[in-house]
Length: 376
Image (cartoon, rainbow, N blue to C red; front, side, top):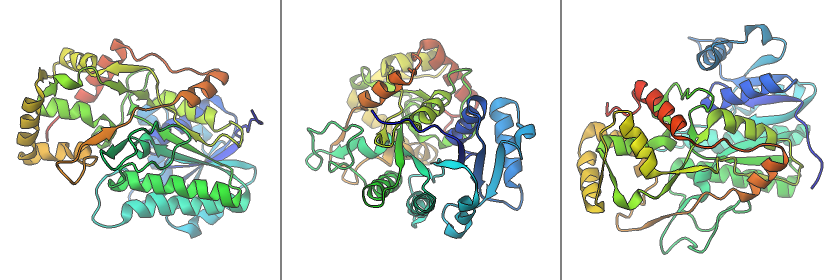
């Protein structure tokens, strides 16, 4: 129910990132509006050149003819509120889509929170001042895990869930949770028109298997990398399901959901077609990766051995980041629930493509060529 909110001209942050550049591409290919890309300037490479380079890498076209006509560069930084004032001067802007984030999971200081929370706070203030819709890209990790005995084990995290005593010790996850809470507070108290998009495992493009240029930074694919580095997978996990959300399809879903009525706030734009780990590992083996199925104790032994290897220990970081500081604690993982989001997408004429063997083998071959499974 409610009135649709079409996207006109928009501001996009993080346009040089993996998701950001695909949202930009989806917008310019299938929308008619203008897009203002907020990017930090760098002395060695101007923002416009960086964006054109990313567009050319992913789409074999830098869209040079659209710069100054439909694509515009705003030099700024979400952490510096004064640089965001220029957004207020732009005519006909309907929404700000925030893909800017620091995605690393460890930091000695507070840089993760400065970007992922402080940046959102600054953007929210601009959107409130100009009555702009705010689209915050978040992560399913904010509602995915908890420590047995601490978390509400009966919880079924949905698009109506914020806090159920889940684990928030990971700095990145905590920052995205705090950003969500900030946005919801602004909706409740300040009348902000906003949406939160919790994305899942951002995987290779469905159209051609193209993956992230800096594949090693994609922690969502960490489990597959761990199986390859350790060389084994426990029998106990064989029936567990993996979700792969192709980046091009995720971008499409986000733009569609951004146009839903004001009353619709939190969405889980994740692919609901899952694949069992046993099938994914077999696909990896078909691509030449030597992985065997073992008992749980053998997997634990292999894990411990890997942690003692400096090179392999670095690879395990993405998974260790989600583990409890208490080695004896049992971490519970909750299923990814997006029934509500799917019902909305169906009504918008969209459904996710099926995760096929051909797709999985195509993108595994692709990321293998990029050195994703290397222990170096």
